[in-house]
Image (cartoon, rainbow, N blue to C red; front, side, top):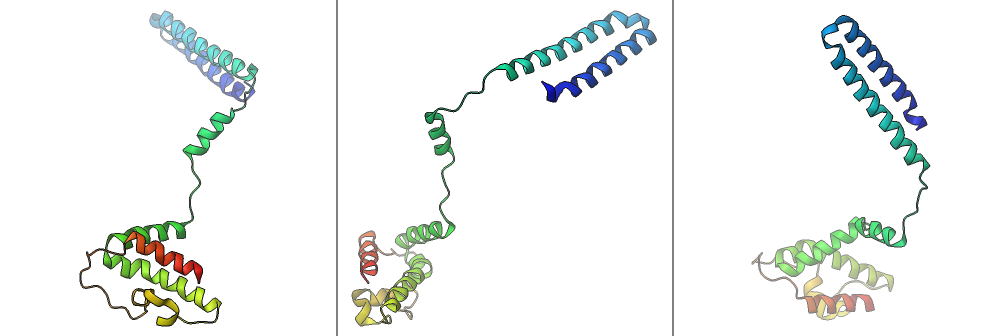
Length: 164
């Protein structure tokens, strides 16, 4: 209510001045001006009443259900790097070119970091059956739209990388 008090005073003053000017300058439309003035003042009174009721009502807290709904509406964003890896994985499973350009560089880096931690380097002996896939000089696939890595092979590769 208090925050609208100045606005109400200004608006009612403007409405009063406008009604007085029209009533004195145009005597033929004096009744219309008075009806419009009463309508404007009535609207301002309604604003005062609604504002007063809004201030008088107790503020209620949100229920746990409403909090859960609000949290579900705005899920926490996953980090950009995780989204990038998810996208590369999806595309790497889809076709050979994306496997070669997007997913394999990340898998090579993971393998190299895991091996360097134990003092080893990526080689056919350390990577075993994954050497042909993860070798740094692997040539680009001829069929760019051919199938990428299967999900079961990718799971096995990730499991082997985790064991390193």
